[in-house]
Image (cartoon, rainbow, N blue to C red; front, side, top):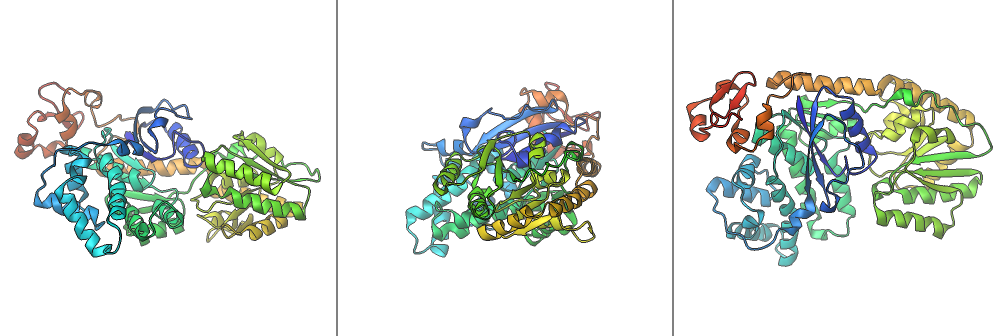
Length: 531
């Protein structure tokens, strides 16, 4: 089966988290072909992959949001019929637009984004929205907010769409929207996997953001909810990592019948035999984190500074690369300003090897899904101190029916004293650390194995193939290779329906070159060029 993975802001450009998971996932499924459709922030990152792509990655399609900002010049004003104007009005007013109509405007008709944003149609809609929602807000603020909100979306809708049997989005947001576009263009099913709840994460960022005009924070939040609603509606199955995340998806409007929980899994055998660190009088604490604001490394530094005042023989090892250069510099400056001793920035390391030096680990993130670093720590019999985000409490204390016991301590996010207190409790008792580590390892061995996770996703792909008459494992793609690779017949690539019985006279009249039945592929071949 040919699976298009739609990714935003992660693999293959950065290490850690979802990227680590994605690389292992693709590598472990050689029976499938994968197409990467990746959204980055900056076009300067084009082709700068930090992973060597597995052999079953057959195509990479890159699209960058800052390219949308380079669109310029006057464009010919496009004309819109009543149905199109209604869809555009609903898009601007963030009120459940007909996305298939929008896909038709900006992808199939190739209407330039500026042809709409410079049009009388847009200005009329914009005026009505401002009068209804922002009567006392400066016109310029409203105009630039709405333009910056809509321009990336309209730009993405004009993207080249890779051909695939299934579009599997690894988040909602812009990535989820591209998956829906692929589904619409190539009449293929959509799957969604959420590691965190993307919309809630964006909501948290917007609430804290300085760059958003306060009167428009609610609109930005509504905008990301709007994007999520479409893929929740269109997806065949929606997976999450833990039960509370599934409940959140349902609360946000996703049909409960399509929501599944597939927990993360790790390669347990890599960690299970790592020896405990000998008792040398020091307590070594590890943090496997990228230097990024969402990891809240500054709170970690403050808390360790307070802990070190109480217990001098402790060390903190911060293991990870720099995700945000400015934030990374601020973290180093904070260490210098406080005069923190025994804190080591290791950079990226081999975690399996480095784990031998550690007594326990900490995680101070303000948002997480089901962190692999916690699972790996527990698999190595290292208990954890974490913030109460994502399913960290469930990992450390167990879900209903899990009686292995407590494997660490949970504190509120951004609570320095609470974090320092929890680390102190862990530091003062080696026996407690060993007991908690054993419990954590048992939990991971029972519920969070990589093999279990892969079996669940293979079953998901099999269910999708059965429901949509797609090729199974080892069966190739429903698309003939000439159609996948040839640009000779754009009509064939755009108009191939899924089933031979769909060859109605009306379809043949709309796409006259795509009428010859090819029963081997259960699709349509071009009668002119054979593609």
